[in-house]
Image (cartoon, rainbow, N blue to C red; front, side, top):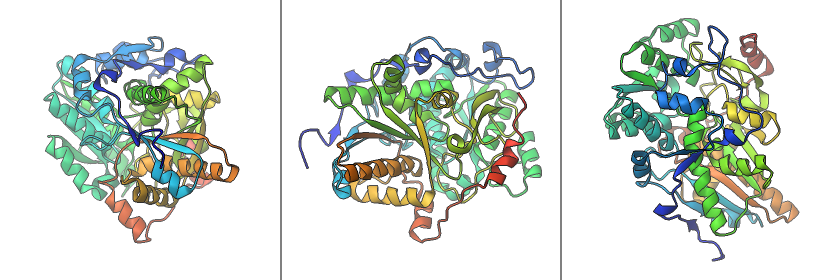
Length: 455
């Protein structure tokens, strides 16, 4: 092991980003606007503000402001767990016998165990500033629900969480952490909302999806005075807040003269990937540097690699704004054997446009390969990774082994979005040999594509 670069690169408190970076400002082709599902016209600030906090709605529509100041209250909260470390994976490199240099940005150093807290605290702040009583949300694997429950507790806001049913059943301890911070948790689809009852009638025995949970959370938000809805991924505002990940990473790398050749992130809705690549993609868009950027998604929910680039409903209940994105169709429900998060049927409009324009690549991975990579990583790097993060680990290992074959000394950066300490049901399934892989057939996907709106 060399001492050239520290095992962990920590920035000082003073090096925390003071502003979020809005990647859209540097995009020549802006993301297509959200559409009102009733009128099919671009959503206005007034319309979005009935669902989201007004300041968040403004951020959602802002394609031009390059830097948006981080509020002092949010900045002070960040100091409790940020800057997060950039780690040189010396031991992983040694295990692989690769000449590649591997780095990962670790976002698990907080109680929520993931990067989700970066946006949750900002969204809760804007809700409190607006004078709201509380917020509603959905959660898949549970990281976002945990993060938002923490943020709401900090600002003394009520938090109602609709949790995808299969995750609710598989992750009881994740539920209990949310309850520690005062949130109420409902398995989705439930019988507590009109949309939940409709989905249960249409799909008897369904294990749920993020699209279902979003529909229920939005219904409760718009029908309850003093509440708004908050989302943990996909939206422009969320990728904006998550830019702190990439800004810190780039500052740390620049400090030691490191330039990544390949940047890899897991992709479900796009918040982690979008945050990690933001400043690097900005350089690429401005022609200042070039990077190979790879999005990794589960083969069981392959929005980028097998989806359609089209306008679609953002939720199964078809009450949310319509977005132009890579989508599997709002009726698509991942198989219950899909163990991690990354369960959303679509992808961020920002990342979808960048992918469509050829600025990044995408690949998919089956979950048994993902969990093998997770365990290989845990045994040498000492962190049990979240299943979501492990998609990026799998492809980082693949790329490092390619370097071993060619002798190229490439620098690889990936995002370690969080820990897998609440994902032991899935790890048990893998260790017991009962985990299986499911890949939807073309016929499965076509049934969902057939429900895409005709726009």
